[in-house]
Amino acid sequence: MCTGRMDPTFIVKALALGANGVLIGRPWLWAVAARGEKGLTDYLRVLRQDIAVCMALMGVNRIADITPDLLERARLTEDDRKILARLERESALGTGSERNES
Image (cartoon, rainbow, N blue to C red; front, side):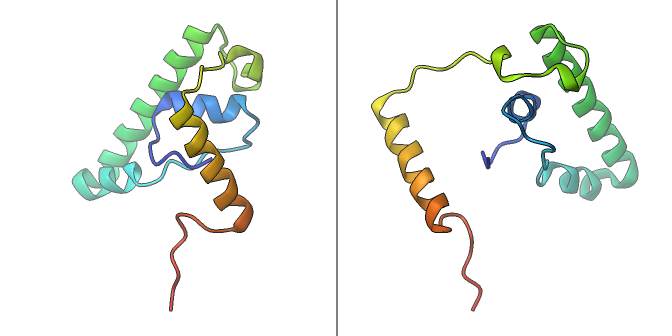
């Protein structure tokens, strides 16, 4: 799942949907670029705290306890369905956000 956005709620959602791990993308790089090792340490501390808050709001205190039944299914609009169908087609074809390197 690639959302282009990586906040604690998306991390917890991915884990609930069965992900074994979640990549956090560029934010860690921005933290390092801005403040070096201290920036990374601070970013990871805040991310961990935010994930803990998200989990607490779901009523769990262990990552192993995050399950799909804790998620509420959103009502999709017709536009949402079209976007999901396009993403599924691109994923099946191996196209989409990958860049052709020539």
